[in-house]
Image (cartoon, rainbow, N blue to C red; front, side, top):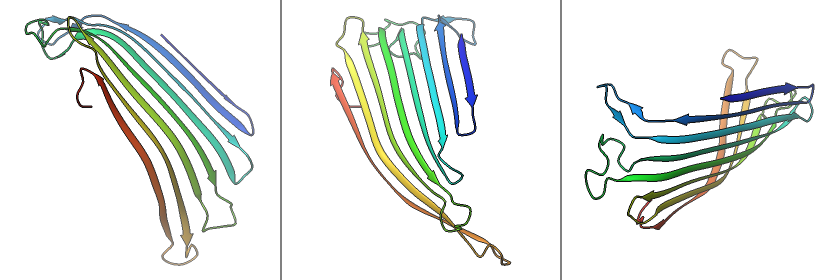
Amino acid sequence: MGLTTFGRTESFDGLFSANYRDKGNLRLSNGETAPNDEQIGSMLAKGTWNIDDAQSLSTNLRYYNNDAREPKNPQNLQPNGTKTDVMTDRTTENKDAQLVYKINPADMDWLNASTRIYYSETQINSDPTGGKSEDRKQKTEGIKVDNRSRFLQESFAPSQLTYGAETYKQKQTPSGATTSF
């Protein structure tokens, strides 16, 4: 099931969407089934404020959560066939956020710039039956600035130059029985 709504005024627009799915065993192409039990929820919220004709400020928020009980190796039709391939409780959670400022004055061909600040976090927690917890977390934080300059617009060869810079920091953290990401 899901819900999506959108609204718009002269200066603002926004969108909100959320959905939920409950999945059971997987039916494979050969007619067999693989054990699986998942509850998946996600959400998206985004909006823009048009400050004036040349400037805007936007935000974008996303969330995803999957709670599952599935084979540690989902390619195996018969879990518990080996000591390491067991049914596993796994939670996958993702959070993303962005803030974007744009400026594009109509009378300045050299200025069509945007600045984007962003954050992303993904966390996977696995608890295999009879085993130790295996957890992984990854965070990304960054900023990106770019501009598009138009020149020679009235000539036989109008051109645009795009340039900018981006910097970000990413950190991966394993814990529990996990030794790598």
